[in-house]
Length: 151
Length: 136
Image (cartoon, rainbow over all chains, first blue to last red; front, side):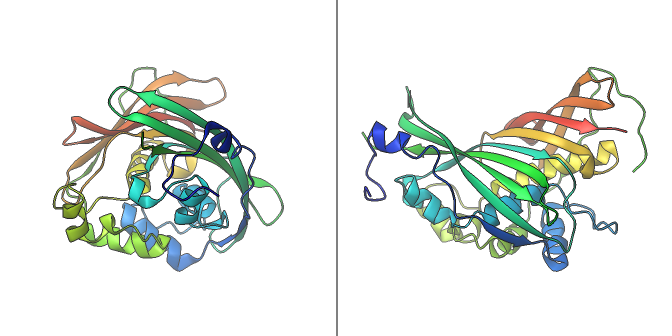
């Protein structure tokens, strides 16, 4: 693999598309929900339903690799200054506190762009599904990261 | 959750104000997410990177504020069916934020589409996007 901060070739970049993440599980534990609600200023609910931000938290925590490992996979490191691009969350049904969700997903696109001010950068997008214990998909999360590249 | 009065296109959503983003809560979130990026809790690192002298809020926290604004209007954040946002700028500890939105479409199926935003001091955009909610 190319070293973490070396700009990948177009072929290397495009080869990321379709790469599947290891996946894993995410326990929606009550203490985690309480603390997260406290951080983002959300009401503490009593109906057993988690805040929809947990679609995102579950997806990212359960994809099976760390953010740093994600950056390495994309031929980058935190030192390169990667930025969050877009975040798209579909909540198909509410997440239930106390349940264990399965996460699966893959890289869906990887493109190179050129900006007048920003220079060369790559946008890598990925999609993750958060699956309930009964096998139904509860949410679909699509994110993208922007990776500045050296000339 | 009970149904709310049918909105109209052009309706402004009630704004949600965060008077001052709390640096201590960034530390809690960093621990919850196992987020090793020191810009969320180490002011020295933030200074060394030339990003100012306050910790940088986690981007998902900013999205959470917008969801809270939608939930406050719609009778619970659980009514959010779809939300898509772009992160436009950093939010720092101590920042005063306003979250707001505008209804852009109302469906026969009880859904409403909205433009949503989060702005520092109510004027400088830090997040923008769209959302669809079920209101029935």
